[in-house]
Image 1 (cartoon, rainbow, N blue to C red):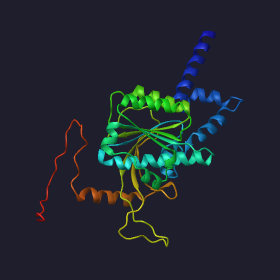
Image 2 (image 1 turned 45 degrees about the vertical axis):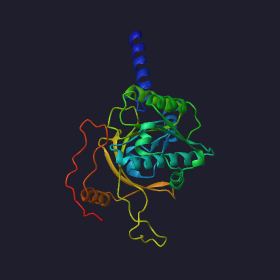
Image 3 (image 1 turned 30 degrees about the vertical axis):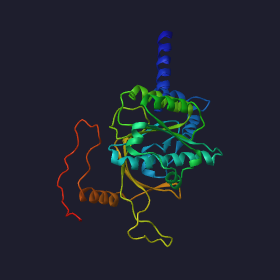
Length: 315
């Protein structure tokens, strides 16, 4: 009997360790045992979890993310095609702004570190400092590193996560490299949790694959509204705040979420957009012209150009 009791305690201990590493809810047997802990394990765990979550201010998205963006661990943001890289980069930058503002409110002027693979920078371009400043980021505390190989980028990211001085660490990778598989993503996730830092894995033109990240979001551009005027009216023909179509691909929810939101750089926060209006606008814009070809390097090759319209020469 004593031997069985020891084995049972060992199994429960292993389950608890695995649940803590993967940030999952504890199994029922272990949860029941911890509920009777006179030291108040559950209360301490709830307080600790609240301190490691950054609410994004959009209730549908915060509900899917179980409160907000995890501040100790990895979150993956990807765009399916190169033409969507600008929208995904804007969304990642907005998350970095929120992380930096949270640090500033706590009295810490923490920098943001952006690590970019050289191929990703050549395909989608480099961050533009005046644009980042107008977006709400403190560019005096922004560090950008361009790395030639993916392995070197992973090494820099792991080293940065061991130094708890950054507001957020962004790792921009092109596609689905073989050296960033499930085991490597788990190592990054564990490093981010140990360093209590948010790691934003920005997968540019990448496919959906297994990952150790808490959540995976696919970002698409959405139709922006018109710019509001001080009197509450809209400036006709203008372009308003950046808008995003967020698809939550990996979460603990039963179904994937489909959310439309916009980023207000002046307020430094997200605002939800009417989903029906945004979907209708996206549908009209998508059918108005033929789509561009698929990203380079795909096994299925480029899509056909479809119908072409010839214009008369100007001279």
